[in-house]
Image 1 (cartoon, one colour):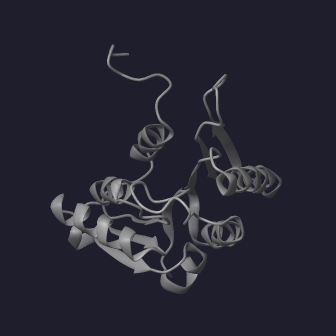
Image 2: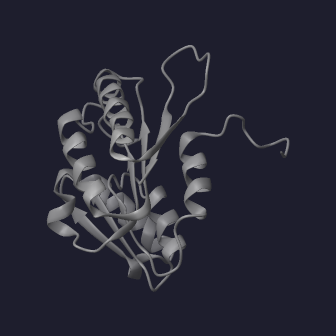
Length: 190
């Protein structure tokens, strides 16, 4: 490990490391929470010009921010933005999906009072598992450091854990011994 590599890696960096081995050129993927576009750009580079990224967000500010980032990075042709809740994934996407990414919480640099909501997210996760190809990956970064994020993190972790009874492999990656609740990554694959 290089000296400048943070350890443990941030959940989003770890997520990208995992997805590099899963997502290929020409694949179709979903960024269920476009936010400022970092995951959207990463996924767009992975699928290349022959692939497709569906990027969802309920906030117009997020769609605009992510769209600007995607355009600046030269990835706009392979990204379709959907200004709607991730709850409605199946309404907008009919293809079989290789990876679906959720980066929960609030839009950095915007109103922290507007967050993903537990009920919407759980509904979206059910839609996500129905869209995933066998061997596809469902990835969720949870942020338990604020009230709704804490409730959402507990509910999502319980929901993901229950996937094991349906034959899914599920893992949690989280730092230990933090002073306050730290973000963590959940991964699942059928």
